[in-house]
Image (cartoon, rainbow, N blue to C red):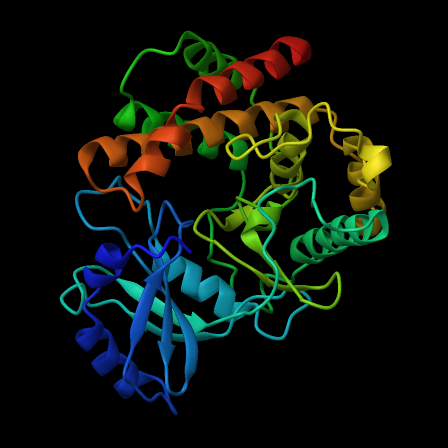
Length: 347
């Protein structure tokens, strides 16, 4: 957490406490709040009270892009996953009344455990690293095998043409937040529009941002206890999530790239990209799609568009952490360039 007292002060704790007393059985105040450094899209706070710890996640203030920051969708999907093979925090209460604290928010249980920002997993043994990646792989396969009808999520996304709709949506989002011309991004958008694959009928519940820093692992075992940040979740093509993870093998190490490029993975006990993909396909009994390069190029493109939105919110004064928003925004050209490289190879 960033310990941003001023940000916590901007959260109306009296209003939150009143809401929680009315909506959450067993809750007892008073409340204290500390803002997590992560959660650039939707500001996220740890709440401490005499009845325990909670997490509050809200829409950011200010003018927002259409359909973005849908915390109500996050609440719905995580609630639907309760008791499934996909671990998610317990959803406690959703407040759709903007008047309470200035924007929609929800409260969920706090999931204690380990969060890894560096995919190299420093400080762990080779055996532990391999087990962590194996657990990520297992849960990803389980996510895509969720029976969406049984979970009450049949209407959670539009059926068919996932990639065509996603390319269109994120192109519009990118243009709406564009601050400068990036030639590689323009070329990547044009390539994606030209090479969008025909719909093959594969549909599942997709997370949209499935990566290691959006996960909480048990403190004493390589077991996932919570997958976080479901803002981009929808019904879509399962290989979109797999491709999203594969970006990690293709990005540089460090605080911003958070990648495994050039890392001696065998020495560290980490799987290679091909091994990870193979294990996923084996778990689900599926074959890798012939257009997987498109999936990866799209993942780079979407991340560039997301970071451009973060950058724009920082410039407009609406970012959760303005300094970090600027650092993340500086990576937009790099994601665009790497996506263009994949596109050129797949052309």
